[in-house]
Image (cartoon, rainbow, N blue to C red):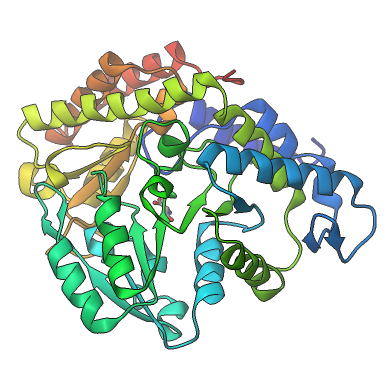
Length: 414
Ligand code: DSN
């Protein structure tokens, strides 16, 4: 590379990823094929429009690659329509809102502090000034049970046009049939924001909301799905909705699609269609459960009491007297990357909350099984309990580096 300065940063990041363990539940490692497609000459091309209906010439290969990405996405999630153009998860969500609603209309989504996402209507977002968001919460934060009775009562009263399921920090499987029944009763469209668990759904390790009557699934492509950074909108079978979504993405919300990213999405969807991906998806959950068990054995409070997916939420402040920020920092020092996280009804502030959030998509890609994951959980707890002990931290860091060396980041998964 001619730009030595940028090359230095890329090499530094490569080394950081190789030598440390990635436990941020929304991150993963892509294959060399995904990287190659993402760095391909498709980056040079403008392709506003959709396959066969573009505003620029020279679309022979962009049309083919976008059609392939759509076809594979539909096969993966068992649905009829896919829009592969959203640049990321938030644009996918926002375009979908505009496709289905008028300003002032009501959306019901999960409260951020109970696991929902900013784009489900947090007051700091611009869309919260355009649509009216109402929230639902867990009934019991120690089991993760959602308060479906209250949800129905509020939905009947407030008449949302859209009901959003889905989360970025919640560890139990949702009762999709209940969401669908509530939506049907009030005449709402029901959507799953599956950004975190799309790979688990695609790999058949988690239920598919479309099997329970959901209309739309929104997702990113770079988390458990193990593709490039990007967004994806899937519509079960309603062509009218799918057409509105296409119009909302382009020209409603975005300009030119990132054709290099769409090519990389096609590669990742192809990888996710292989039998190996099913084994991977199931292992992600086994690994997260193994880590959760170690935390529980050490009497560290887990939100929702454990996990059914890729993610674990631990209340380290009430259990160990370590704040989320301190935990994130001290674990960073020993080569473990995760993020501090608010816990439900957290008495502390977002920049130094009570909890941490961690997960297994990336270490499972490296080949970790339950045994190694339990070992990592033990090392995490040892570090948290000895956060000021330099010797112990150095010893843990050494062990983390050894584990990382033993399980290098693979270049290919199929
Ligand atoms: N930023 C993603 C996450 O980490 O969960 C959600 O948008």
